[in-house]
Image: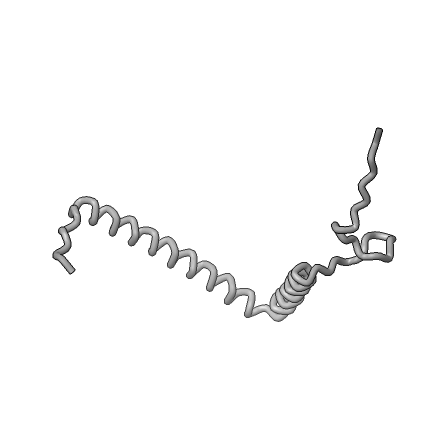
Length: 90
């Protein structure tokens, strides 16, 4: 490998400052998220509600990936977008 040219110190310092600022923002956001999680974990009802909600989301995602959809209102049959009837209008 050949020698590398020294980067422009002004550009390099500016990029480093931007990176440091972004890292500080990310750390602040992470701390805020951890504080919120800690508050949720202290409350049994919130934990139970979270688990129920997460279970519902995961079940919906699983059903969607599997191509299964819940029955349409009052039809007793699954609503499948592949079962579209095309009607020509003249």
